[in-house]
Image (cartoon, rainbow, N blue to C red; front, side):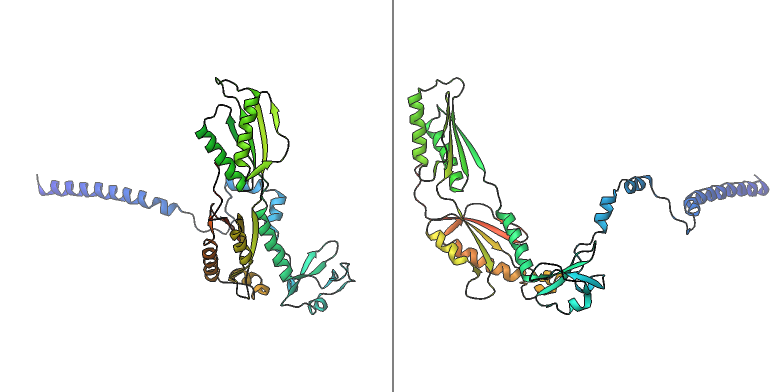
Length: 338
């Protein structure tokens, strides 16, 4: 091949490679070049977002806009308001907000806007009373549990081993303060005992449980089925312990719990927790009441140590934001008959 032919072939190969490289480079850069420039026009809303926005009801929008708490003190947006008289509870004549704010004892109370229609009405809120009410409400939520009736079923032909197990379960429920529905019924394929024998079995079960339970109403006796409605003889005690800001107790009321355990009582101990430091950031009036979590934990552990010298925790603790409930039973109990 002559030099001219070789040069032509080389040029052709280079041209093909150059075009291929240009094509690859263009396709690689095309997405970047295709990006539109920044625009000041409003971007389109995705269909899903439009649907979500359209499905939002006016009530939900109002809830989102609703403030977390009612306006207080200088945040009340009215120049003239009516005050709920703290002594009579009646409405005072309209007065300037500044004049009423001058009467607020900032260490113990604040002024709150109660309603703003048809006219703005304000009220003095005592911080200590409000905190105690909220705390009592939260503690009550811990304790407010409807009585539960547990059903324990027995067959007339139950053997002594299974009977002991069933009655131990009933005993535990009664000691825990729960009602028990004890049902005796026949089992398929077993012979029915005579009525006299049925009565004897029922009375024996009652005798074995007489130290913890008793019949609360007349038993229901039908053909081959007897139902006993039992209630605990002695309900468990509930003690609420408050944080001791002074005195020699770790928690106020702790001595009463120790006394109950010495007397052989089952006790539910509710530790009402003091407000943490962050509560003072939300409400400066609680500054004198806040307690660090480390100190609360230290006293709680020390109190549990005292309590477990006389009792044991028979059930897992119930921990809430405002309170911790500990379930205790005395260590030394009368020997069970079952």
